[in-house]
Image 1 (cartoon, helix red, strand yellow):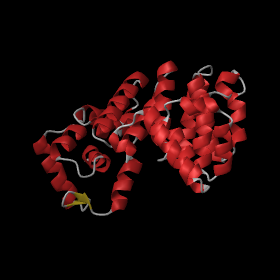
Image 2 (cartoon, helix red, strand yellow):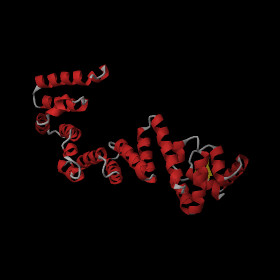
Image 3 (cartoon, helix red, strand yellow):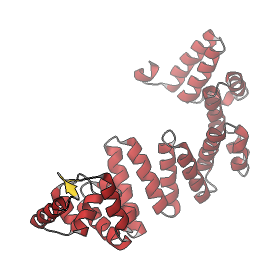
Image 4 (cartoon, rainbow, N blue to C red):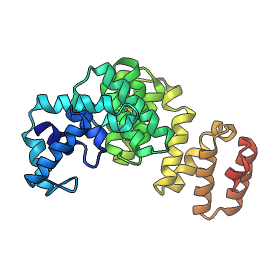
Length: 276
């Protein structure tokens, strides 16, 4: 009875075949046990008679039994990587295998267009990985979580930068997340201080600052930065041209904004959909 109740608690709404597999029973045996649980007023019409019953079953289950059922669930749900990933931690798998399963689930979520699920699974995989692979996963997860969970994105960006201390792209990304978090450009200085001027004052970071300043309403500051860095004026960077044109519009410089937009379209050779 305890294994069936445990499977029911861990997999609410699951099909009988899955419940039987996780409980370690044949389908006909599951029917008999379910009837007994219904007779004892634990289940009613395939559901716990009260949500607290489910919580009680989960709370009373030993960690060894929980781990056993979770491992069975991971195997039984091989065809559904996202669902299987939900049991990876409780199954206490080998870290490499746990990472492989979680990363596979993230790819399944990406293929299905479930971006929030992909982001969370990437973060879970990053915490299981090691070395350069962990850094790459952490950076992917941070980018995916920017709008879903900014604090988690910042944590993962810090992790990636810690693992790749000499990588300028990772440092620039962390610098951007720090500024987004604190709203202070100065907070990026410590992260970028160890890098050469080509990084600290390079086009990538300057362009990012312009876009951030536009988004935070610092139109005059963004335009001043744009004017002081003419090397940006010939780079094929649609986001920067859009940001500067928006700043010009917001400050009443409509003709200049239109001219810059045309220049950006020509320089970047954007597609018709982007022109609109």
